[in-house]
Image (cartoon, rainbow, N blue to C red):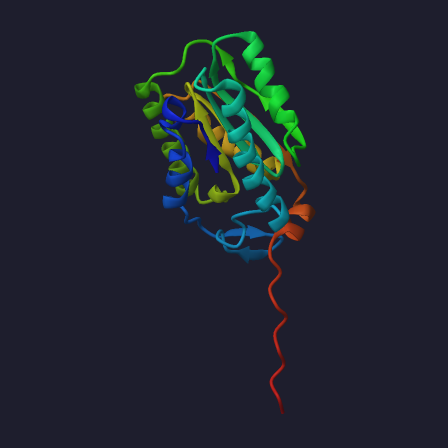
Length: 214
């Protein structure tokens, strides 16, 4: 979930998430000789981490509103307790204030501060970013060799940020796909790289078959 802030902050708030939900399907993928459904592998975080991420984003939005008011436009995206900060603030001091404020939010593990010191982005720029996010997600689905929903995609001023718990192969493939999308200025990987064994453990386990009664 992507959090933004009142009035100017709210414009374009959760459009990337909405688009990601609309593009929810993903083709099966072969892992270790077994066919695994894309929907099964949608979210590789624990249920506790998912709840923590929601709480982090909500608390961060409230605290940043208290310290910034409408002075700027900041997005907070948390995945597996790693927080990505994007958007714009008018001064370097405000940028430092944003990071310091988020560092004090409960359960935050790490922070990637990509907030720019510049004027607030325009509505047309945010609309363009929303379209890019949708195109990236659609291209991942079309590729059929990657779990599209295992990635969280955030776009800010043409820069695409990829988040998720993925293998090196998945990270490289997603980067390749994203770079091929029109309008993408750069790709920033905010990814947690896991092994194939860790991926298998992250997938929901299927119940063992019950032997028929004789």
